[in-house]
Length: 144
Ligand code: CMP
Image 1 (tube, rainbow, N blue to C red):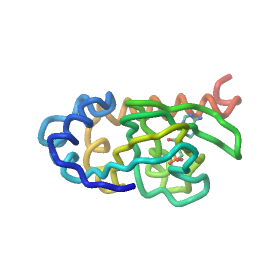
Image 2 (image 1 turned 180 degrees about the vertical axis):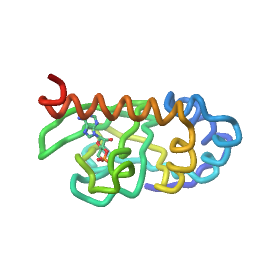
Image 3 (image 1 turned 90 degrees about the horizontal axis):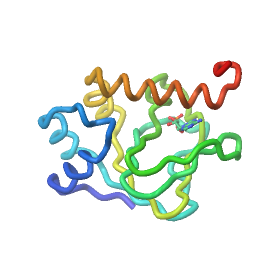
């Protein structure tokens, strides 16, 4: 399900996302105007491994499972994000992400992502730290 958000509610949700904590009010308001809210049912695929990546997802409620080649590799919950890798290198999705139970996300388009997170050095640093951790966890040779 896709819905557009009334700005005050979107602002409230965006403020709960640690990654965005450093964004100023003006940026947050712009994001709140444009971010879409999407809800997913238990078991539903949110993104699929190998597909082109068009969005960046912030989990505002619920838990999602990350699967590579059909195997679970991580669980992401409220306040966490996914979908950054395909936006960073413009390559296909590295994993599928599936709703464990009902999941609510805010979705930023590629353009919104680069205009907000991509412009904030603190947010980018946090994002890259998490991404590197994810890569270390999934590529044993990198974690040595
Ligand atoms: P992307 O490749 O765009 O789409 C799938 C997403 O799953 C990926 O971005 C990351 O956000 C996330 N992801 C991939 N591998 C892991 C991992 N090992 N741990 C946590 N999240 C991951």
